[in-house]
Image 1 (cartoon, rainbow, N blue to C red):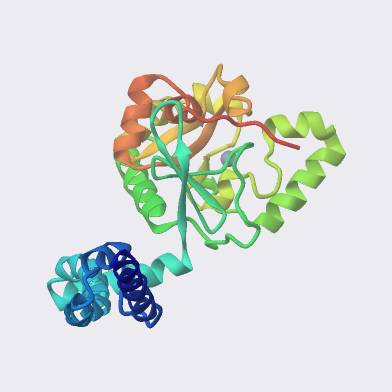
Image 2: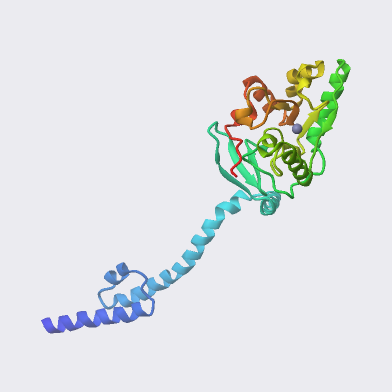
Length: 281
Ligand SMILES: [Zn+2]
């Protein structure tokens, strides 16, 4: 009898194994349940159910997709999202971290933005093919308004140097290096790709001279340019941080909010954002 029982058990195991080999049994747990021969049929049924398990997997997959479908409730939103995705493919913005002061650093098309502010200094360069061709409209508009108000109050401001291309900066810098040497040139002129003038957001005012600081116009600009979204980009006493000598004539458009915050802080832009301005080569 014991031998019979053993044989039955062995046979059952073999049967089960055959079915399992056919893929009827999905889990080892099923094998345990169907240990009494007849159960094989049950298990076949169960298998059917479990075969729908594949369907279950599909359903699971669908379920996984569902949340995003729910997010895109309205077709218009879907379209919008698609548009955003397409734009991202053209200009992928990569968050590379945060500055010590908590400003997000993003890079898109080789251009670095810190707290949303486009940065061109000795640490952060612009690609040679970044060429807006002129002052950006927001900068030009702000300058026009500032110039008009200043004029009404008796101060004459004019744009002596606005947008400069990579190539122009390259020739200027090379000339300065030939005249004064590289070390001296680096104090007052940017290497190509590192000039704020290439951004289309910087303007050199009036006589482009340190004497501008003591003119009525220079004092007015220092006191009021933030109201129009500009900052004095290279303030006095900050050469060690900005990497450039004091330039009372060089203003940079950053928008009224940032300009006002920077003005009130008494810091230069690098200090305010928590970034450096040092050549790596
Ligand atoms: Zn300048």
